[in-house]
Image (cartoon, rainbow, N blue to C red):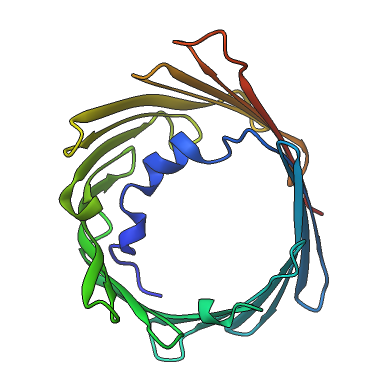
Length: 276
């Protein structure tokens, strides 16, 4: 694939990952195994409150094709085919879910040095169409996305955004919710490895005149340990500790407390991911 502005979903992703990724109030255990034949098997068990769920993901890679098959505890089977370079500079993704075959989707992504375009179509009798386009360079990118319901003839969503990315910083502005909200974010990296960073994000909802401001950060204690924290103007304080217990195997402990309602029980989560 060519190096270009990236997909529309990449706009604001760095800030979003710093503020949300790996934060959880669940108990999660994941174990992965790999074979020389190109097959990867990942088993996941999650406890959410009093409910326990799980799934098994099998992934097979052959040349430019990746096949994923996921089976969960509710007997749903999700199969995804990802094929690179059917046509130069493209990626094709087809997914089907059994027994709900109406959830199938076909997506095509096209990458250019100065543009990226995606089109996704639901594979059912009344298909919905999602599309996005981004133009620019790896440094500055402009993009938009939309969704169209062919049954009602209405747009289900439309969003626009801009991002500026430099080696030590990244900024973005996204106008979403059909123009009803705007989100601006900024990330500053403290080192070349980008293992330590500070982030700020402000969101305004026009229909309710509600503003949410969140600040956070990530700090690498050493090559094995990372701590993260975040706080918003509504008093929600979150923290996370992630430690590589053995190579490629990670323990994550996270928690959240409402500083404006300390009588409420804080939320805690633990995740263990074991990889060979």
